[in-house]
Image 1 (cartoon, rainbow, N blue to C red):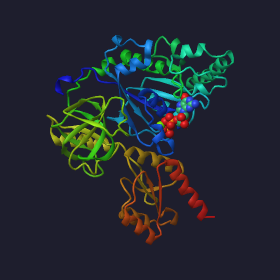
Image 2: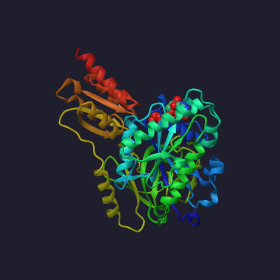
Image 3: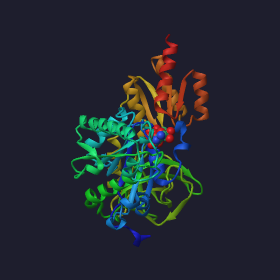
Image 4: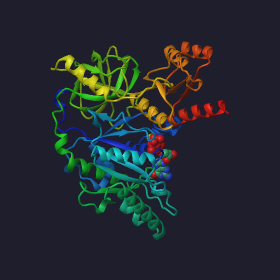
Length: 452
Ligand code: GTP
Ligand code: MG
């Protein structure tokens, strides 16, 4: 309720890294859940958000954190899909995250998405810590459970320790190659100039207390001023997903990164057409430690302050677009806020050509990611939109000059029955997948096959 509005905003922590390096598992370890097991192909497809209160952080961090040293309310973790360019994670043209954890598999080292993530961190000047993950796979490793890394390290054989050290120094070298001076986190004196590396196992829990400690330390030390915002001001956020919410109609999952949204507010939401102006019907908040992507039980609340993941139920949200901005109007003019939303949407673009394939995806971020992947594969796009495959998409595909472009690539969306029928009749291929690179691979294989 109104009085409970915090004066320091919760920092937003992005968890970034290459596919399968252990981002979701690390978060599962922190929340005590098993989100990884329920994922299609065990790959994260959508951005999620989980609020971790300070009590939990200090419980997990054990002796490493004294909660009385901290006055930030906790951390809001954002899980990202490793194989996406995480373009949905933007706010006012910058990065949505205040700090980040870059997860790197110690065996695999730097991989394409690691480099992509590090470039984004560099460009947006986001402080981060490196979790050198999967240390339990070092030959001869003797797992110790969720203890601080020093304790686990001391319990290892000389050989296991040497192997780990070698890999960690390779990682530190790779960070140096990308212009980051890095060291083991316990040796870092000044986190503003040096990146701390924390050896972890998301599987066994070793080093997880250390990651949380460094994150709390980093936020407390470097973000306190930035977190001291007017959290009661008009809320601003990003749509993660548009979903039907039982008993409430269409609702949007939102990461609120600024201000407050109240149950009696009017909001402007970016859509596939004109921005939607609508009155909030209900605000639903997941329980602490719950992943908003998978949570079933929500509490209806009067107000939510940044940073937080929440659901906003309101009329007319059907065309709301994942990845688009959400703004509370409050005491400003609607026109002003609508224009703000339009300008932000215009900055997120996919380039289309006169000739090419049709692409449909479930979010602006995934649409951008599919478009990037197609661009790398030199496959042109004639039409790119968020939403299910509809008859008009098939119509557009059928007007292609080249036979190889008479296709619709559908990422994580449904194909409407009449669209399917029209495609069958017109011999238009629709490729569907929940995994971007598979979608593009299947298309390329089909073309290669046909042109043989
Ligand atoms: P994407 O969401 O697809 O980008 O992957 P991710 O980074 O979230 O990886 P995820 O957490 O799904 O883990 C990938 C696989 O690695 C799973 O099978 C995990 O069980 C395993 N894994 C993650 N962390 C560890 C670890 O510390 N040790 C070991 N042995 N396995 C791990
Ligand atoms: Mg994941």
